[in-house]
Image (cartoon, rainbow over all chains, first blue to last red; front, top):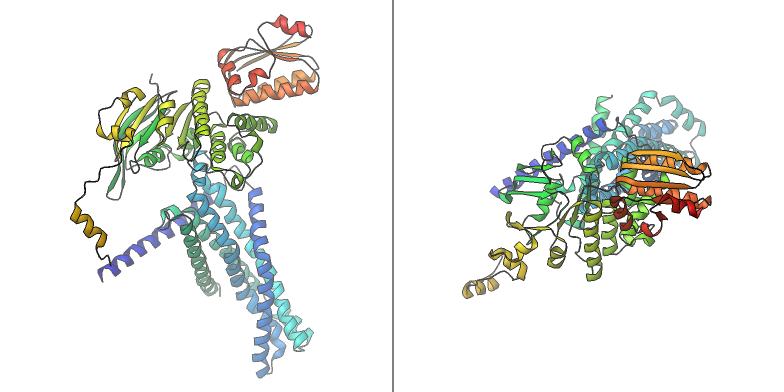
Length: 262
Length: 264
Length: 109
């Protein structure tokens, strides 16, 4: 009994320490990034890395989800005789919810995990210490470009996802099930408002930052957490942790943002 | 007035209730090669990390070239680090860059030197460590010995005043190890560097050291010239030098029960 | 760092002195390259150099390379002890043409 409470206490303290460190990292980088030297090229490299790694999975999952939505909405709407609103239904669901969330989750899996592992390995092989001893601030040199790249690339990937998904819905609804093309497209144009697009945009910006922040902090501060002395196995554990925590955070924030902005 | 490059005073490091470093005080003179030795768990790595500013001690002061690095602001610490070079035990080369790019990194970050100058400087240092043919290899393509030499070239690229060397000979064959020893001595004599070496290797230590500091269980057991250390009467020092295995005074019954006890 | 250029009859003499480190070596480099551009042989007097680091050496090396391409004579004069030690460490003492008297350099032209 005592042991359980003990463990609970330890876990809670660790969790709070980690959250504190993560926000601390964000503040430090926000402060440093507005000071010289300005490194633009590493940001572009990271955007390419995140985009290139995630693009295939975004295209595939976008098309698939769009088609699934088309299928399921058609099924439901047909019972109420309202297949004309298929376009609006698919578009609004994608733009407001599924686009931002699915994009974020895919990026976590592809790029977030890789970045966490990379920083974790650098930490345990003393590369980050080496940077410190060369008077190169590792948080600015390594982490900052990744954070900025996250904020830039996730909304872009989200846009691609949205386009492909709406196309998938079109394919199923119009081409397979014979919904009138006019009603699909016009329904979509009529019902999607700037507030919907804005919601999706805000979500993907915040998700992009959140994912990169959690994955970077987990890897970068690996030596301060419980896996610090476990070497390669520790890296894989920390990466798994990062993926799980990022994903859950995305889902939670999705609700929060939706509630606050409605 | 003082010829000390580094002054360590009353250094204490605790990890929770464990005391890793217990009141360590000594000076490192400018232009000397000092070797820090000790058994495993004696606190060598912790001491090194404190002196590099990577770890803040529980209490104590470390003055390096006039600055107390335990209480210095980050900018001050970074300015100081531009005059330091560190060669880590595993090399710690950046895996996404070639050997040459690794070595050039401090130059690109901290100076405005012309591209040609950077190239020539890189090659000069590579030549010093006999790595010139391998300048375009990636770190993953290097052997252990080559990684260490590349790491040394990176550590000395800016001609630092103080050079730190963590286990230089670990994993090297005797010939390469001897060549590295020679290089360390030449660096001290020609470039007047203060060099701190942490090592297990007795032969290297006695070959290169001006002074040797022996740590044991977190305390500074003895510090002196190689002669003084060789003639030491302290048991712990003599054990270390004679490579005497640790005594295991064993009770037969106790040992038997340890081996056969049910450990569930 | 002291770095002054004298024009002799058939060559340029660059007098160096003091400490040549990361801060001053770009100036040294410019001085050497500018002088070589003029097309005259270059002799560098290093008697008063108290300290030279690898960036300084690199400038000397680049100068040598440039002179070689332009087929101009290039030499170092009266190298101070500290500087000679560094050149020996980098094995460049065997690469440069080193003279202890300016006349010997002149005689070679």
